[in-house]
Length: 80
Image (cartoon, rainbow, N blue to C red):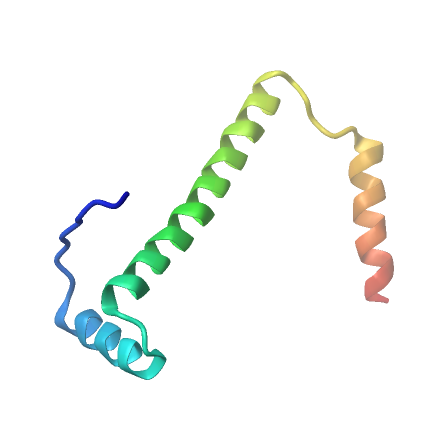
């Protein structure tokens, strides 16, 4: 099942979408849908991670000094 979504975009975006559609043999609608899907997946993941981190912080679930030093040491030892 699908729904219709109408959006206004700057003329340059509309032209770029049309050009890409011609180059790829895809429709403008398909390209726009894929772009929206990818954006939503990325943003939903990021926002969920932020909410999870806030919940952990609110619960006092922080890394110990030893854990921080171990990670810091792991990455700084590779630089040299």
